Length: 262
Image (cartoon, rainbow, N blue to C red; front, side):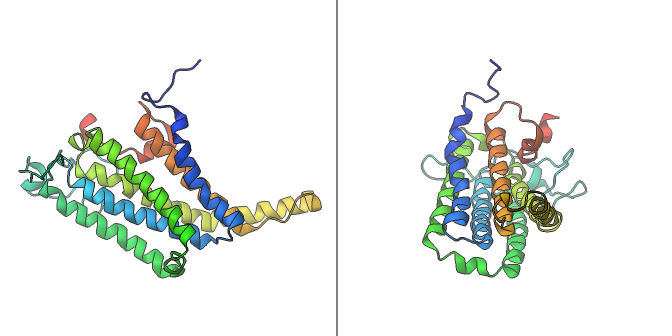
């Protein structure tokens, strides 16, 4: 039997996340959802993800290291001149109760990242204003809330309960939603251009070669399936990053970069 690559976690524990992310496909097939409903769910999840990870980045203890990076958040680059408060071990602000302290030096990078992330999400709303309207659907809101709560719990478990805030910088924390947003921008653009033509070609090819042996294929449904497959691929990759000792392949894109390990 091959060794289990996960750190004491069975891959079956991914099942609740898988089911939650497959439910939108059920909505398309049985509840008469449109593609814009999928966009609304993913838009809401990405937006709340930026907010949650923005708050979490306040607790990141390590200073930001830019040298040796291949992925840079907005407002920083290899040539960025940082003042001393970016690199020194700034005085933290203690919070009441069991909460860890927060680090004011992280605020500037958080604001840059949130502003850029929500600018992209705002552009999407301009292109698809129907997203706001469809969020009134109770079933859609419940689906989005379920996916968001799953993300929040994952952040709480990994970041706070296991103390990862002590081993990460604000840049590393904010990379997580940043890499997800970057993937979706590229994926949707490719799916809407190259992927759209490919799906159309496949549909026409199947109809010409098989004829009446298969039911009519709806391009909208195929596009929705491709979106759900992309979302499941993202979640499975993030699950691997969080639980595998040495994730490989596509999953490494969602692994925050740590120049200190080089």
